[in-house]
Length: 197
Length: 382
Picture (cartoon, rainbow over the protein chains, first blue to last red):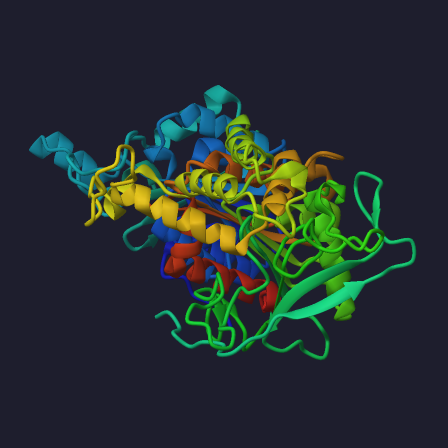
């Protein structure tokens, strides 16, 4: 029996990861993605999560999970400890992005990054026309209660990887009606990238 | 929902090991014979793959769960061991033994030295946490068990878990060290030393030769009082006692009039009735000298081993702070073994590992289920 994850980004990420890989999921939350990868792909998975209540849910799913922040989650590991390090929907929420990014590329042979696109056309309309801080499907928070510290677009991420000499292996884009092929920086709510150092 | 079911009446058993040449100790000495007091709960399956060893803390014993005949209080970890509890005795065979050097039925300084016919006292060899584990291995082999499903324990019990991991990683499928450390900090050694000095300063101690006469009750009682303070937290003491005074206040100077003073006195005096002062000296020395990485770094020993680890710590535990648990986690990460870690929110201090039943049950029960059954991973079709 196959498990169907509700979330399209989870299914896209599952499509990027070969069976029986070793995976470190940073900011794994309640472990939905990791559970999918373990059950469908037979990966050897390890999660890291800061929220105590989420830890109970991960352990209840039979997952290996470490309670702690991402900085300490990464620094202990030796180089190339995992085939894949996943940073899904968390890079925009960490204080020291560059440290996490660099350390992920050190600890993982490849890194999967997923983040909400700040340049989605609905965000552009709200900011450009209405003059309001954008609230969109992938950025659902008001300015006063957002956990996000960094706001970046798909174009920003391409530029960042180019500057850092990071190899872009694959990119997938998700809009409100499924995968996006055309003008992703305008029409994608979420970008998912497979990169390596 | 937590299970309220109980194991009912249980009984402590005894087994004596007299291997040829005696039981070897880490310091090179040999004990001619070792008796272990133990209890078991649940049933060992025919394949002998469902056995869990529970290891006790400094003042614990073999009576971990259920009730002794006529007793009103249950074993020290009854909230976690029993039918449908964290260590589910309907699924697992649970073993708990009194440690080597203890005074609750296992061979220790208060036992009769077969060479002299009198209690060992200070003739008892200095033993280590590793020696406790050596004796536990004899017990596990006595049941014909090749590999334990899990070893679990808190505080000093956690050190025994780590000693299993460091010394016999091929004999366990999983390890659950709780509120513990790879090695004692100077602060932990310091508290133990004050306890030992209190015992040795008692005129009744007599270099450990007090058996048959008055015991060093004042000294042992003070040692226990110090211990008790370190097991609680600032908040838990405030909640439990505040600055409340006892009902009957004595007019003499310096009598213990605060509730907290009365509590410490009561527990100190009670402890003397059930614990041997020499055992206290030997066991605290063993845990002060413990170092899980003494021979080889732990991460090197367990690298590539098929063992799963669940590390638990508690937020208000200042005696075994969570950074010490994180050091254990770090060794597991370096070794690449599958590990889970949770720092449970609690205000109970070090005692939390005996009290935070709901959280521990959730984590331990699911962890053990995974260790026992693994995943039924579907074959992936590309």
